Length: 222
Image (cartoon, rainbow, N blue to C red; front, side, top):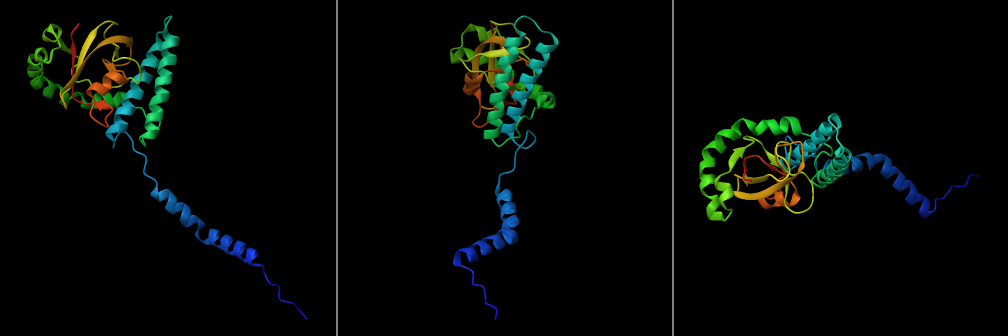
């Protein structure tokens, strides 16, 4: 005479959970994945575009230091490596593709339309600085790096700039033509671009949520 085996409530629950995992586990994982926000990149996000450009500028600078080293190159490279690491943290926090670099094509893309707009607006800019209390330096300043975009170097400290065209001590005035905010800063270090603003200087002229100034007026004022 056979006896019917009776499962305990605990074993019945375990079997039900296992069956549900086999039948619906994959759908659950797919649903969870599909709900995640897609990663953005420089081609579809202004924020990611600016961060990618900043990262690329720093990489270009490092490449230049390695190609033509001097006594300070190792220290400069170490500093830029730390900056790149911070930019990657910002990329991750902004849901951008981490490590994306867009220095080459990104820097060149706005160069064609920008000069025409800057040439028409530059005379007005030349007449307004004295009223803003920036002194006579702006009145005698000359526009440089026509068509260049401006992004941040990622460096901390007081407002300053870095440049591959002007020596330390040079004063540059950078105006964001999209919001008419400007800052006058001193070049304190070398970079891979005409003018990179450190974090403090960039905050003075940036538009909220943007890490790239497409329409920039850069003037040498001292």
